[in-house]
Amino acid sequence: MVRRPRPPHLASQMTYRKLVTEFRAEGNQSIAAHSSRFFKTGQGQYGEGDLFLGIRVPVIRKHAKKYKTVSLDVVKKLLTSRFHEERLLAAILLVEKFETAPRSDRESIFRLYLDNTAFINNWDIVDSSAPQIVGAFLKDKNRKVLRELASSASLWERRISIIATLTFIRERDFGTTLQISEMLISDTEDLIHKAVGWMLREVGNRDLAAEQDFLAKHYTAMPRTMLRYAIERFPENLRQRYLRGEL
Image (cartoon, rainbow, N blue to C red; front, side):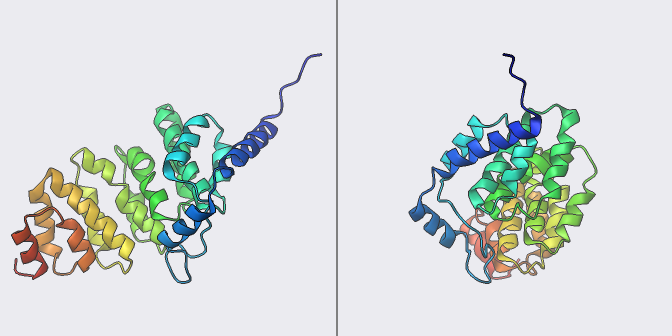
């Protein structure tokens, strides 16, 4: 008797069920409770309502390695999960797929990512994927989409806009980072202050003069957290002068 291959959608469903069953078995209630506090899931907090299985990042990465060949349909199902760790797993799988895909196929992964930013909705998910997908795709392309994301009402889209520029910074291409940073100086969210300050610090790690030129224009208007992150590695006497507004 010759077995007929299962239709692709049925094969994807079976793979998804197998993956989820194995993955959720790794959950730990104590870790989940800690994660709920750490990622600020209380009312009015940035992660309000997020649900956790209690799976640590090394375990998530282990499963990403095991299931790196799953279809994009399976990844998309994971990305829309109500559980934080499954969305993080999906983001890591998308990074793996993007990095191993032919250049001709990368745009579809980039588009899937941007079409689903509603689910890339915590800082660890953004930070684990935005540079490797959004930044990498836009490295040699028009970056208008980053300015659009920086103007978004979504905290996470704004964070994507600045964190994605880490890819450019690593190539000593600082213009987009400085432009997006300027757009986000008046942002009201602490997670944006930290992200912008972090990226400015990364610029300074490679070209201190470029960071200091930016600070000379903007440091008095920058939120305190943003400034502290940006100057974290400056000599202490110089840090204090920035913090006292003496430059």
